[in-house]
Length: 307
Length: 307
Image (cartoon, rainbow over all chains, first blue to last red; front, top):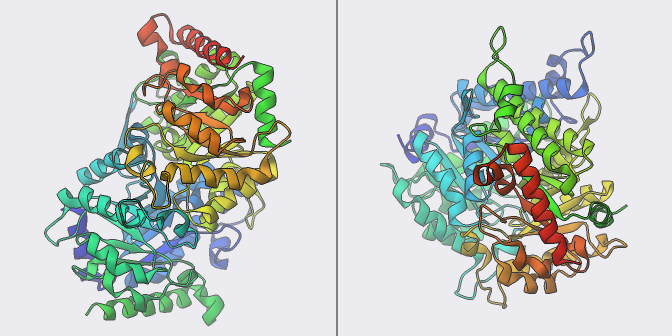
């Protein structure tokens, strides 16, 4: 089954296009996660080990509280990587938890490098690595975000690896941050912006990977903070799943995202992170209940746009 | 001491601009590294644990064989990351070995993300992470490669973190792969290429970080495979250290790199990976001796260009 078909099926079954973004800050975790991480132990565990345990618990609790409203999780790899080897073990643990909850797993790693290195990253996140001691499985994500600055030959290994396993690749086309304009919005001599050129590249690379649902395994990251550009990007990428970060804390509004949800409701996936996980700070109540309510609110708001 | 001054001092002291690139392939390690990783043990260790041990040994042997000819190591993070948590532990081990050998450590991770996430990556590689259990030290690299597609606000947290500790940031300006042309060589409506625009951005961001030696802490990755562009990029980035990958296996030649070595010999750092580590496959002899000879040859060839 192709990635596009897997996403279309999951969106239909769960009646949700909501992606729970997890970018755990080990200085700002849910209190119950810190409790679950336990005491220092005897001999005392170093801070990194306890922090990684707490991060894994925090993510597990957030998944438990919201999974029934979501179709996928987006794991911000930086937030695990800053805890080194312990953080990577926590990341693997969270991938397992998300799968058990029936969610697709998007590793938000924004990797990009020359072909031989891109192939190594693909092994890390989507595939497996041959070694002299036997094969080593990778993280087992369903999709990975990648950076296209190095051109088509740097994306090819990611796409090849993804296509082998029914996984997907989300290429950065127009990111959600204000500085995106510095580079992505530059006007090209040949007409259009760099972002539009990247969109064309995504569409071309994705053409062989379009499944029965009309969606490709080469997908795009398109910030929810620039809704005025969505219609044009949809024109250039008619069969592309859009991952739309930037809703909530970054100022993006779901109401502006309608053009994303074509050719089918699964054409757009809305990622919300801090808005869900810190809903209790705005709405009161305990973190679990507030996150669940906010996820359901975002799910319904998005679903209504497309029906 | 600023990063630029640290590099200038190290280059002068070691009479070398050579950077040992380590991108260990766990299916193709030096035989002695595989032996050092030991047997399976009882109970047998899983392949990932043995592969990570062998990768760390391979890198330690390569550092030992070549350190006296080099000024820095460039660690390809993808090659460790594909071994998950074990790989990250090996990476931390190799950082320690390189430091003990007196080498600067460049983490070649090509990270790039929105500001809050860029700050998390900076904690991972250059700084430390506050947690509810106490502070967790990062990898402790001297420099990190970063991707500028997300614009100036995505680079700022890396530069701020680096400047705090005398570390540096290498921004991708013109990479060494053929596909670099797809995006980086696009002509802009305002004139010049995207790569040249990135060079201007690097120079601006780096201006406050120029040290006594005339070199900034915001450096650039400029592939050795496009020597015809070096003079123009040097014009646009007069105070920038160029990291020049692509010599050897990718076809770049040291002889073409002269414009890089200004304003001082430390203005250019030549990275060679497979050409050194697999020198024995071309030259014969044991891997250690062949790597040492090739490193010395590349060191001398580069040094002569600048004296």
